Length: 277
Image (cartoon, rainbow, N blue to C red):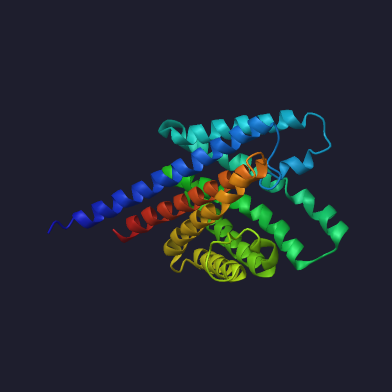
């Protein structure tokens, strides 16, 4: 038996996982940019920047600029020579979306009062964007020189963002079950609310595992699987509403999130393999 066969196979699998995550994140980001250009507007559900510029002149121009940025950032990430720059550019635009979701807090809470469901939904909107940012930071760290001081910092930020987002998303599912039930296809067996509860618990466990580092790689990979299962659920939605930007944008954002978590898993698997060797 070749003693180097198992490490070589593991390294090859991790490389494929990283490549798959990069392609998924990049192509989904490019698709989100194309959608912004086609509609000449922001995705209202996944690009909160649109809400901030609703009454401002030149809204379509801002959307086109964001779309072009998304396309170039995603394209740069695909090219090895510009992958680090592309990762930072992709992280920057999703970070902008996260930061510009924050102005929604005051008017929403002022209008509807403080409700835990509403508050968690607003916070989770921010951290969903940060999940993609975390994947980009993990990619940047994986491509950076080992001696770079940024490597350790970006890994910590990625771990915290991924973990907190998973927990908040899970709590949101458990606290707001009825609004999510309508997204569950009728062909799925058992009660729809049961699937929402199961997914909520899954998100919480995955987030806790990533934060604590206990079975974090397994949790991240299962989280990727959950995103793909959600994609199956999203297919009938955008097929029933082909002219709805939000439906197509939801698919692009969901796949970008899956790619980000996949990159995170591959990056930390590579680090664990180096430490154990």
